[in-house]
Every structure is written in structure tokens, then in C-alpha cells.
Amino acid sequence: MRGVETMATIEFWYEFASTYSYPAAMRIERLAGGAGVAVRWRPFLLGPIFVAKGGADSPFNTDPVKGRYMWRDLTRICAREDIPLRLPPFRFVQNSLKAARIAVAADREPWMKEFFRRVYMANFAEQKDISDDTTLTTILKSLDVDPDKAVAAANTPENKAKLKVQTDEAIARGIFGAPSFLVEDELFWGNDRLEEAIAWAKW
Amino acid sequence: MRGVETMATIEFWYEFASTYSYPAAMRIERLAGGAGVAVRWRPFLLGPIFVAKGGADSPFNTDPVKGRYMWRDLTRICAREDIPLRLPPFRFVQNSLKAARIAVAADREPWMKEFFRRVYMANFAEQKDISDDTTLTTILKSLDVDPDKAVAAANTPENKAKLKVQTDEAIARGIFGAPSFLVEDELFWGNDRLEEAIAWAKW
Image (cartoon, rainbow over all chains, first blue to last red; front, side, top):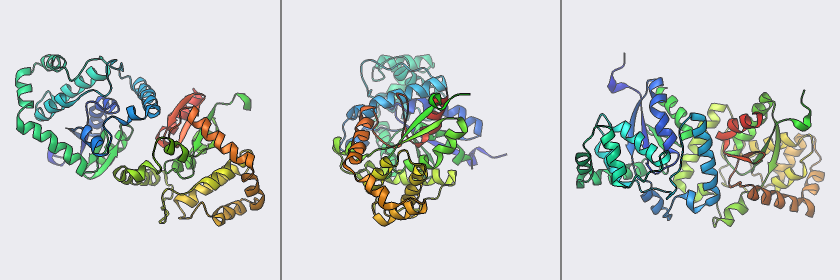
């Protein structure tokens, strides 16, 4: 039997505001678990990557033709996978900074994966503003987590710096979009590469 | 038994210079044929679409990080599908105008699908320049086609206009990249959506 140390692992680089990260987040534990592959959830921010390339907004907004297609494609994917999809009427892209900081601080908490999934649900199924403190507090409470403690841990200078370092690591390892999967140095981009990445990790 | 008129059909919108169109072109007839779906091959040009968006070059060149990933991803896809891949050392993107004009003129010729595949092979497996007359003439001859006649048909003003109209039709129907598949008005973008598009046509 393989020990935990040698278990095949896939790194899941995700961004809470990213549309295609949503179905990936909802599917990855089931698929990886079924294949005996461990998942390391790694939040990062896409904003700085887009800004560095000269774009201040999501390519799905700056190119409305592509944006329209993306929503249709995402609708088909979620329907097929039986994942609820109801878009927030107020804004796309949502501001994911607070949620990402909580995610980084919660890296070793037992509730963290469920927190990630519930933030995605809030954004893409429940039409909630994930930059709103109430949204995040409600999710934390639903997981029996003390919101004040979780938010305080998220807002330490060390934790803020950690998210920046993590985003720099993403860039250094060739990541340019979300979701991305890394199996050691092998990069896979997009929800539609999840199965392939898991197979790669297993092999 | 269904007549040809009512046979489920998928439109394959392709561009000879497009990397992901290559595996799609090599796979589509086998997959669609196996599902009882007819394929309508529809060449168009991506250049005017990129220029209209303010980009004069392929996004894979203007964004080298994304470009690097694309080549790795394409290499994995071709390896998995047993499709030969050897990149032309001299240029990316190749100029596909002449080949596209021949393709438009050959729309109803019995040799056209094999012509399309051989142009893709020349570009992505045989390291040939597909804007070179010799490359195209050699392919036509290998199909027992008179190259002078095929090239003359390609270069009539009517045929040149037809390629422009076809590109305008692509834009009007929401196409922004290649390969794209249309099942009536339902759009699918990318080699990785080919199976889904065929299933949609069948359903």
C-alpha cells in the first residue's frame, strides 16, 4: 500500500471569480478520489496576470462574442454534470480577494474544501456577492467556523503576502488562466482537461 | 431509413493555419461517420477576425506563455490520438489564403476532404510551407487532380468573394476561433468539443 507521502497528487489552481473553475471545483474531489489521486487546492488571483498583460478586465468581458459563447458553453457543461448554475445579476467578474485570502489562511483546516465549494455555489448558483462580508460570514458559520477568527487569520500581513507569493508562483510555473492543474511540472488548463490531468497524475 | 436530406449534419468551420483545427480535421470524419452524422467542411479565415479585434497576429504569438502551453497541449493531444506532429520550423502562423481558396472552389469535388487532410498534414506533420505553390500542386497531383484547373477555379473573382462571404457568415454566426462546429445555431468551439457537437447533432 502506498503511503500518503507517495500518493499521486494533482495541484488544483483555482480563482473564485473564474467561471470554468466552478465546474472543476465541483467535480475534482469525486474524480480524483475515484482514481486514488490526492488534490491540493491552491487559490490564486487572475487579476494581476491579466493586468500584467495589459488587460484590466476578464477577456470574456473585453471580447463580448467570446463571452457570450463562454456562458452558453458553461450552461451546457453544468447541465450535463448536474451542477446548478444561476448567474449573479449584478456583476461579472466578482471581486474574489477576500474569499481568496480566507482560502489561503484555511489551507490546513478540515473545513477548507467545503468552504471553497460553498463560495463557488454562492457565486455561480445562489446569486450572492462573494466580496460581501455577510456572504462569507454566513458560509463560515454554516461550517461551524468562527468567522471572526477566520477573517482575522485571512487579514494578517503574512497571509496577504502568502496569496501574493502564491500568485507569483502560478505565473512562474506557466499558469495564465484558471482553472489550471499541475502534476509536478506538467500543466493542464481548463475544466475540460481535468480528466486528462488526473490520468497523468495516476500514470 | 433516413434520407440524405434529413441526415443529422455538423458544420466544421476550419482554418488551415489553426493548430487545434488539425487534430479536429484528422478525427472528424471517423467520429461523425461512426455516429451517423454528416460533415459539412466550411473553410474560413481567422485573420480578418483577429484584425477586427485589434490583433494582427495569432494570440498564441502575442501571448507567448499561452503559446507555449498550446504547443505542449497539442503535442499531448496528437500523441494520444496517434496523429503525427512535426512543426514547420520556419513560421507560425502559416499563410493559408491560397489553400483556403482552393478548398472553397473544391466544395463539391469528391477529392476535397482528402485535400483538406493533406494540407493539414503538410502544415503540421511534414514541415512544408502551405503558401508555396509547389506544396499545393504536389498535393493536388497526388489526388489525380489537375493543379492548373484547381488553382484557376480558386482564383476567379467569384471564388475569392465566396471565401470572404463565408468568413463574414462565420462572424455573423458567432464564430471567433477555429475549429468551430455548428449544429444549426448551436456553436461549439475547439477540438475538445468535437465529441459533444456530434452528440448534439445526433440528439
